[in-house]
Each structure stands twice: as structure tokens, then as C-alpha cells.
Amino acid sequence: MTDSATVTTRPTQAEAWKRYAVTAATVAGTIVATNVFLNRETRDGLSEAERSYLNESFQYTGGGLLFTALAARSFFKSGAAVRIMSANPWLVIGVSLVGSIGTMWGAMSVSPERPLLKHALWLGFNGFQAATLSPLFFLSPALLGRAALYTCGVVGSLSYVGATAKNDTYLYMGGPLLAGVTVVALSTLAPLALPLGVRGLAVSEAVSLYGGLAVFSGCVLYDTQKILHNARMAEAGAITRDPIREAIGLELDAINIFIRLVQVLARNSSGKK
Image (cartoon, rainbow, N blue to C red; front, side):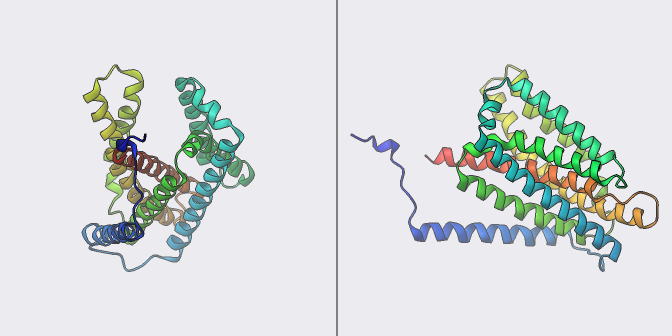
């Protein structure tokens, strides 16, 4: 005899289309509202140097995220994800941090005049990100697909806002965003290090999820405008043109937004069952 409490019903086709319509309207409304409230005064247009630098940085960002997704899938299919999940969490965190930070620092600091080494370090950075993200493939593909779609919408719309806003509108956010990232990181690591109660865990999770979404969304605005600022500096000869360095920041923003959207969607879907 089947327990009625465990039976889940699938939505009808009409209900599914209604959900899709609501989701599409929400995404579109968010983009419009973001543009209206955060981007009332726009620049006249991008210079050729700004446009070229921004496009090249976005190309590396998209290529890095695609490589990370494909590599994470390969790690999962090879069984590496199982070994990662069964390992000591502190060991995983330590290796991930050392590897990611080391390759990231190398990719950002090596001169673009050494393209082979720079690209190798950049691929190594994306490989460490892929290994860390590979256990996510144990979740439903539909959930991961929705989180990826929402991430593209959030990052794309905020990048557009940052690229069309007046010069340096969001560059003041660097300090507050660094503080916010620190708080989010501490709230994420707190359950591993501190004996928190149920309420403390709930608060820590809320800060990590929703605070992280807000902070890393702000980072997209900041990093997009930083790319344009650096494009003008490079054109003036003050710094070296380095789109890989710019792309790494946007990649980290997108990955962090994706992870938190996966967690939010997973929690919401488990709560409905």
C-alpha cells in the first residue's frame, strides 16, 4: 500500500507552461527594473578600445565556463566526483584553495607576452574549478539546467548594465564588495568549524545563499566596469592589456552565483515534496 504522503504529482502541461511564462516574465521584469533603477544615466557609447577589450574578456569568460562545465562532467563520469565527496572535507578545501589560488595568481600575474604559460595556468585554474564542482552532477540535470539558465540571465543582464552605465559608476563598490565576500565566505565555512545550533545554521545558510547572490551580483557590475576602466588605462599605456586577467574575475562571479542558485533551487524543490 502506497503512503499518500509520499506521492508526488507532476504538473499538467498548462501548469508547466504557466510556470515557464511566470519565470520568463520575472527574468524580463528584473532586467528592465535593473536597467531603470541602476542605469538611469547611460554613456553615449563604448570606444573601439573598450568594446574590443570587453568582447575579448567575455570570450575568455565564456570559454572558461564552458571548459569548466565539460571538465566537471568528465570528472563526474570518471568517478572522480565520488572520490572527492568521500575524502576529508578539509583536505578537499585545502587542495582546492591551494590549486585554485595558485593557478589563478599565476594566470593573472604572468605577462601576456608569454601566452603558452598564461593559457596553461588559465586552463589549470578552470580545471581546479571543474574538480570542485563535479559533485554537483549528482543532482538533477533539470535543476542544474535551470540554475545555469538563471545564471546566464543574471550575469548577462548585470554585465549589460555595467557596460552601459556612466564611467566608473560602480567602481566605488570594490571595498564594500570585498567585505561582503569575506562575510559570505566565513558564513559558508562556519558550519565546518563552529558548533552552531539549528538557528545558527539557518542564519549562516541564509547569509551564504542570499547574501552571496547579492554580493556576487554586485561583483559582476564592479568587474564589468573595471574591464572598461582597464581598457582605457591600457589604451593610454598605463597598464598591459590582459583580457584573461579580467575574465577570471567574471568567471568566479558566475560560478559563485551558479552554486548559490543550485542550492536555492534544490532547497525549494525538496521543500515541495
